Image (cartoon, rainbow, N blue to C red; front, side, top):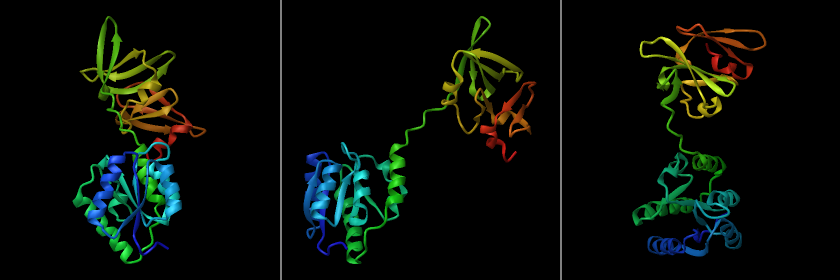
Length: 261
């Protein structure tokens, strides 16, 4: 059970920010006693084990063990407040009330809101919630990289000229030894092909996945250009394209793209 006398641990790798938060807490929550401060997640965990504070203020990004990793080990032993320099890390889990967060630089009004919620939970003798699922959401958000801008043009040599082919005009891409065959439509909408040196694997990573899907280890198709699909033996299929004579193989590993067709 959590103690009736509120105590706190502050963990942040920046000493000035630790001190500033401690001063603000003293003004906002005079009854709270800061029993320990830590410079990283591992030290925070050691101090938690030693003092068993009621509340832990954990910086998300700390060297070595992060605030999230420390929080997993603290579990339901304390009420947790994450401190972050990035407001976009405030995932839905925070606003549901089970977790709270403060954005650097911490401002008094926002801290007062957090303190009010913490006092209400402690006053009602609420135990700290089970937060494993919420930490999973937060960690996934932190690890998620910003998606790159989808490829818009492909440069291809056609005869003696270099053509900039809009990705939206591409019907399919097929690996052809050291090259990639691009099936596309010219400005009149006629079917055309071109060879480029960029490997198919590299192109796949840059295409908009909502339109282009891999259907074979050597073939990618624009779903908007698919006319129909005929299933074959051994969980394979053939893709027929609108206005083109080429048919594209679908291997077993990629047949799931057409389960509803």
